[in-house]
Image 1 (cartoon, rainbow, N blue to C red):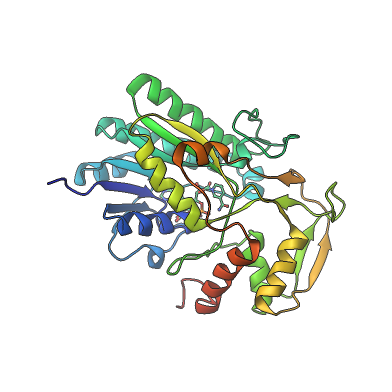
Image 2 (image 1 turned 90 degrees about the vertical axis):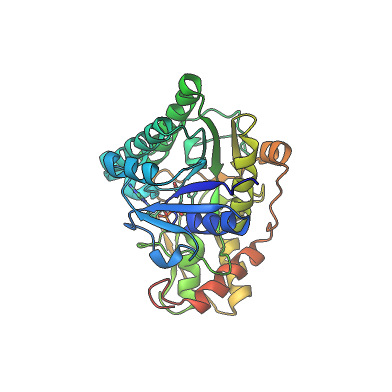
Length: 330
Ligand SMILES: NC(=O)c1ccc[n+]([C@@H]2O[C@H](COP(=O)([O-])OP(=O)(O)OC[C@H]3O[C@@H](n4cnc5c(N)ncnc54)[C@H](O)[C@@H]3O)[C@@H](O)[C@H]2O)c1
């Protein structure tokens, strides 16, 4: 009888990693979560997952985890992921996102683990004129976060050439929404949808809109919001796909919503007026980021279930109503 696969999930205490850990368990896999919980939550880890509290930058500790478990493949979410923070903390971003990843790949190599699914980002593209953005666009990241992710992409490719480790590099656009048991709880929170919903909950007075003079129909930035459960579905497919060959692809809905449209949709979902405050543009915010996800659709046979922004916001709203203080007090 085939034994269930064991997947090591770094960052499994975080927003996207925890939803993926739950999806893997749902499919009958064993899950080992590796997280230092610096930015994640033990409560977010599904109960059936094994927790290894470990920092990816600690090579010896990471090797002990691989010695203790027979791992079949890795999903790698563990990273620092704030563009703004990265602008003044380049060293920490490269240390965590690149060196941490380097230790991970070396531990995989040492222990004969041949598959990795990696959380990359649309920030690897930088400012792109052609929208929707497909994978043939040049990668010119404009901040240390995007550069650290792109650097790790290059390392992964080199480890395939040299050691045969297969990869799925998945460049997500804006992750959003919540699963039944897991939602978004970042500290500090910088993502638009949680901030809008915190305002609806009365935890904030108003939502700041950074820039209202962009070259877009209503002057605010346009983004592609991809539901976290659709990301998990794509990861499961990618994990299978890379048994045959490696893949690099975008994950998005191919729909763009402006900041004002998101706020308007949240007003409709929550019934709350959600006051706004206009603020200057933030450096490095491109006006429009919309994915072409044709490649993932074609090769992974994947299609997002959620494309309507109100539906996406509705799932997040349900989670925040049930967890008004995030994971701290359920
Ligand atoms: N949220 C988005 O919209 C988005 C978009 C594109 C890409 N991504 C990528 O997806 C991944 C997950 O994002 P998220 O929003 O779930 O972030 P998150 O901060 O919620 O989760 C990251 C998790 O990794 C853990 N971690 C960080 N450094 C670690 C280390 N050195 N050792 C062990 N654990 C460590 C944190 O404690 C946290 O639990 C990140 O790699 C991010 O770059 C996110």
